Image 1 (cartoon, helix red, strand yellow):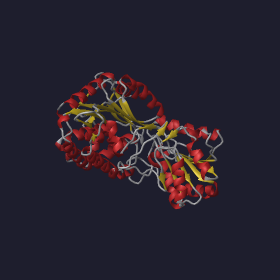
Image 2 (cartoon, helix red, strand yellow):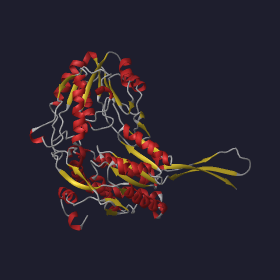
Image 3 (tube, one colour):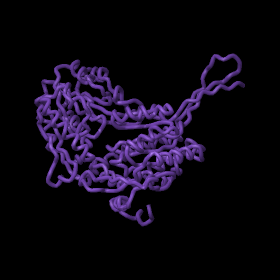
Length: 499
C-alpha cells in the first residue's frame, strides 16, 4: 500500500485495492503475474458484476511458490526463536486490527457475506491469533526414561515439518486462512496458500499486510487459480510436506490421492450434514433462533451447518410456527448493507445447485413451507436465495442426506431420544451436531450417543481455538484448534545420547 492509500478511509482503501488491473500471485514477498500470463475473473455475488481479475496459476506457478517457501524455511526464518515468532504474531494481530475494516469490505464484495457478519467475526480472529501466539512458546518435547544399559539419555524434540500447502474454501477465507497462517508462524513452517478462485482477494490482501508487518519474504505465499490446476498441483507437489484443506468430501478424496506422491500428512475438514436435535423440553425461545441461524448463517454456506433439524413430535407444530415467524425477522440484502442478516450465495453455479435441491425435496414428497426461489427485483442480478424450510422430511430423502450448502432447513420429527440419536448417526458425515434440552441428563445422553466431531448443547456454532473442533467419518480428520492443531505442523524427533 502506498503512503497516500494509508490516508484513505477503509472503504476507499478497499476500492483502491480492487481497482488494480490484475491481482497477481504473492510469492517471495512480491506481487508476480502468472507465468502463463492468463487471468480469471471474480464476480461480486451481490450484483453479478465482474469485480476483479486474478492470476490463473498452474503447476509452474506452484513450483515457483514452493521453491520460495522452501528457501525461506531453510533460511533466516529457521533461526527465529519462539519468542520472536510469538512477537511477530502479536504484531500481525495489531496490524490486522488496524486494517480489519478494509479487509471486510473486500471480503463482503468478493464472497458476499454481509459486513455485519464479517464485522462481528473480528473477536474470533483476534482470539485465534492470540491462541497461536501462545502456542509458539509452548512447543516442547520430553525427556524419557529408557531401558538401554549404560549411561544413555533419551528425549524427544518437536520440529517444524517444512512447507505446508493450504487450500482455502470460498465460504470465509478472511478468517479461515489463519487456521493455517497462525500455525505456520507459530511453528516455524512456511506456506503456499491456494484460495478458491471464487474468493481470493482477501487472502491476497492479507499476504501483503503480513509482509508489511514483518513476516519474512517466502514464509507466506499465495497462488490463485482453479482447483483442478493450481490446487491439484499443490496437493501433488513432492516438495510440499503437509496439506491443510477445507472443502467438499469429493475434493478431499482427490487431495488424499494426490498426497500419496510423498505420503503427505493431511488435515481435512470436509462436508457435513449435521443434526440439530430439539427435544420437547427445550427452551424454544433459544432453540428456534439458535437452530434457524445454525442453518441460515452465511446463507447456509458453513460446513457444520445444522441443516437436519430433528424436532420431537410433541413440539413440532409449535417449533415450526415459531421458526416461520423468526424467519420474518431476517433481512436479506447486499453484502455492503449494514442492516442485512443474510447475503447471496457465492456464485451462479452454487445458486443453481441449491435451487435444484428445492425441486428434489418436493419431488421426494417433502412439504416446502417457506422460500424455495431466487429473489428478484433489486436482487435479480445477484445470487440471492430465499431462506427455505421443508417439513415432512425423512432421513432417506436426498435433502436429508446430501450437503446442499445453502439456506435450506429440513425438519425431521422424532418420538424419543434413542430415535433422534439413530437418525443423527444415519449419515456418512460426522462434523457437527447439537441438542436443545433443559435436562442435563438428556443432553449428555445425546452428546455421548451422536457420532460426530463437535457437539453443542443449547447453542450452535461456537468455535474456540482453545477447545478446537474437527470431523469424523466422511467429514475428515485432524483438529482445528487445541494443542492437537499444532501436531499437523510439527514432527517428533527421538534423540539418544550416550554420555
